[in-house]
Image (cartoon, rainbow, N blue to C red; front, side, top):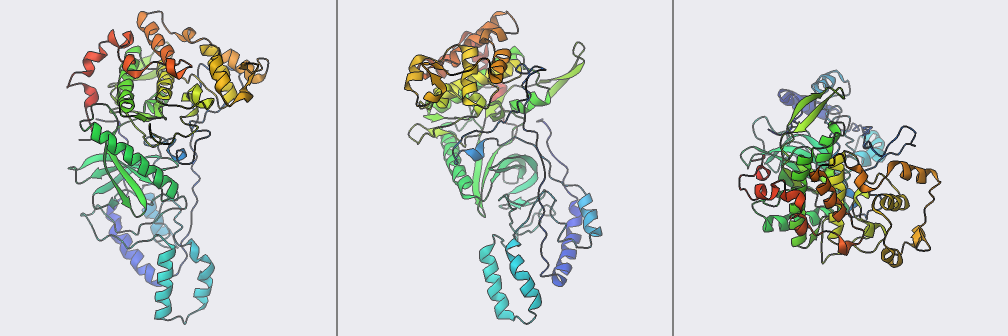
Length: 527
């Protein structure tokens, strides 16, 4: 079974009583102003930089978001499984509704939401309260004006037993669709819980009643035009992937369906488990074993090679966008370190998040990829193509092996200094060709070794091979693979077709396992 992320839903038995109370109160308080609540939830988005951190080092927070991404790509920085957060679905809300003198209508939505559908009425409400003589014709005119200015729709008439509630379609102040457990969209998708939230929208766990009650992940995009347009581009990519790989042999996430729900683009996916980053984080950044790294690395290379063969560049590969099919684990106690440690049972993965994926013939934005996985040709604005994905995979494999990020930085100059410290000098050809001459002086990186930043890089970065945890052959083979993926020159960087034939995979028997039809990686737990 997948990692359990289902939250308790609200007591559905109280809905009928709520609707009765609300109907009665609605007659008496028809013009009462709806309150607006503000959200004050904070998330811990920082990652520990173990291995790049020392007691005396100055603090560096890590943001996993894009630094300079273009507007059409920015919303898809962290999606699908990031920032898990529960909706407030407890029965306390029902008790508060009974005690609250303002009535059920005001305590209906959770405090996290900010329903501002009626905010436009504030300026007119006092006049309307003072004017007791407006007639039916004026009321109808006001109703039409109100309908034009809001995105409020009449309640759906579809019901499925006690599962559904007829609600107006409303957005909060940020453009998120206001919904809660038990709501049904398109007479098909019954919302169970929230899986994640990002700038693009929310991902909800739903029951798909047209797929035999299977659980799916439903991505609900904000009703904001730039996010909706980005979602349309992602849908185009996912439809091409489904067309080329109908049997899901190449381990890219499957989109089942998409639809426009009152201005919200909604995408239905197979339900997956934790991301490889979230599992690492919940396991106190304990690295994956060499065998687990080998299996995950082969699957990532296979999936991204499939994209490259179909003239697609993912552009946003990172541990957050590699999801386990099933993140169930076993627990063991480490006597030496005096802590409990988790070991994932199955390392079958899927590649997700195609919101930034770009076809070869499409416009290529100047800046792509999350900072820590960004290739040097992107930093130097030399143009990018498929090799930028290979660089990102090299950074990901290092992180799986050691549990911390290879390039822990937020600054381009410092990023280049880290590269030189770990991989050697930037090639002179790239320096001559780049427009970013401000980072260089007389053909060399303009970097002050004696500065605080220079001291940080010197103390926390070292040549790549010195990060080896063992002198065993398979460990050296892994680092040989990573070195080939972290070549400065894109033209010299390892091709993914060649990576699948690397000795690191051949000695582990992964290629044979991948060809097996019963391979666990092809199992889809949502069916």
